[in-house]
Length: 302
Image (cartoon, rainbow, N blue to C red; front, side, top):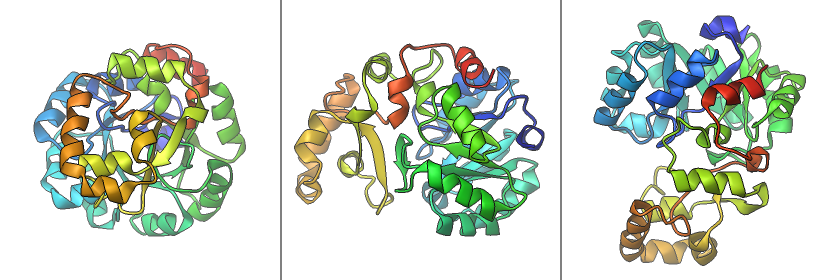
């Protein structure tokens, strides 16, 4: 069972969302019976140290963007020194890092978004796979969870599989379990939690919007200068004036990146989300209030 593999009481894991899943949120999810994962994002040792301190004493793990970790592998050593219970790798080849993670005593979780990626991940001998559907907020693939999950589960053999993408309430949890998931990995619902690092105005937008207001796009990666790393991968975000202006005009945005980036980062600094990014999944329809993380865990997994 996934609870035995990860040493938790409830089959729920917090998605390691960059700039959202900090130490306080990870600890709150873990203390509610799930497993909280700190989102390391693009890598910042000073930030990681602070967030591990925030979660001190809690049974938590950490998640990395694998292609970013490959550019600064020392960050994995830094994280493992803090004895996380699990390390999740997403978006890149996990095999070069698998043995070091296992040797530390941490469980290896690999997120996959296609069967081809799942085959590669299984070569790393993970303890857990995450099948991520395109309904998910943030970066992901193009396959819906409804069909991807059972296909990954059939391929995984004895390796437990978590479902991710669009799960924000008990109904999503029940549906995932009916499709053979061993548990769930939840992101956007926790973005609108008390403990999340999400900006207050962004939390409110998540509460007020609907799944119709999301789209998969690359424009935010282009303007932030991350498009090379995310080549071929889109991210689901809330539509705003910036996406209206640039979605479908990515080549022009690339050509004007220097000027547009200055405006973008200024908007992000003042929490102007008519321009700045809010990653969110299609499950925002089911989010009607900002809640404590423990209450979210309780509502999803009684």
